[in-house]
Length: 244
Image (tube, rainbow, N blue to C red):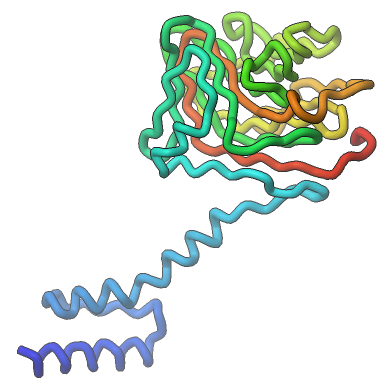
């Protein structure tokens, strides 16, 4: 048996040297199947490269969520929410009330911040695939609220500490139930911008933007439905003038 195993391994190594890592054997013996697995294993490194994060110009990666780890559910302050990790996504469901908020406590972002996420809403009620910037553990009462599909999925708009900002209402931008929307919520030196699926929904410049302690958490708000986050990346940048 040892002689046969050594012969099979030697043959496989010779074939690898001649063909490169893309070569695959076609025989189905147990020993050769094991060798075949080792030959194709380098392909996993290609996947890792493809999923790497590249920061936008001027921004620095500050946080990247790992929703394959069950402990990711513990990184949030939960307000009326049950948070779990399921099949590589963060799932947020209401608990005890219709209004649901979660605020990230694993990292702080006290100034300019850019949140990129892929998220969806499901349920009988669809309202608010909404991101909050520069808040605290209590959520919308002290934050920028970049509302997407709010008020029963009838509009999108900016609220500052729960006060609507005139001129930011967009009643054409609403959530498609079950769709994985790609959302970018940004505070760039006081310029507050929401983009959904590559389109700008609104933009507003704050003359005295939130910053510092008490305005250093990001989070999410939804209403009486299930929020699923498939991706979450946060960037920061040095203080400066608002982007044009």
